[in-house]
Image (cartoon, rainbow, N blue to C red):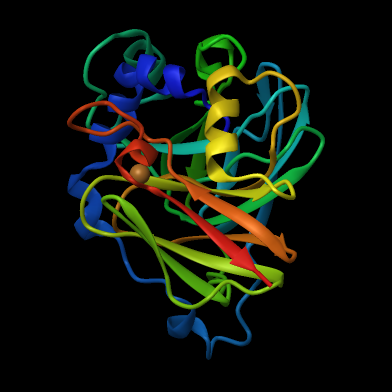
Length: 292
Ligand SMILES: [Cu+2]
């Protein structure tokens, strides 16, 4: 959420980065972690919880965590909007390599793979997302570019993260209330969204990586109001960021939980298209859902 429309276009180099990075060879590497797979694993440990604080313009987070199912709790200390995009650095690449690559224009390195992470909460609120972390080199990046149109990673919101080999038994995947499949260019829900605390299992279909940002629209507001606000980002936003899963390449599911109350919700993907650089919502990847 909360990348401006114009900025989303302007950062297409970066976006291209996000996209091409994830298109990827890693599809085959993903293993299935569906809730059904682990439903019988009643003795499994709970996911490790890692707290990430975001502010203008830095992350405060551990630099090393153990492998395994991990719930990232993103606390937005404000004052602006932030998220925590987790990227995996393949091919032995390091955080220094990533920082060099992020300074370059042009296509993103293929070794940077989007693996989710908690999407945008409103300032002074928090969101959670869960991912199965394999050992390796990672980074947390913030691609939000308001205010000012410069993505926050370029202002300091890039944080190295090493995932070490786990010693504990793996935790059970969260039990999903609804499965959301992200595809070029739509959201498909396994069932109607209902009120209550909902755990979403998010899967990206074959194709480009996508994100899901959940926004609770203010009463009487519509998707168009939210898009208009992204363009100017002035005054109070006509919606509230409830998180979601940041850019996710095909292959491995991720999870997020949000409190859903009756009202209108917007699901939206801002990732720039691999072909034309336009944000995916401009290709139709946004959907309004009414919850009774
Ligand atoms: Cu998308």
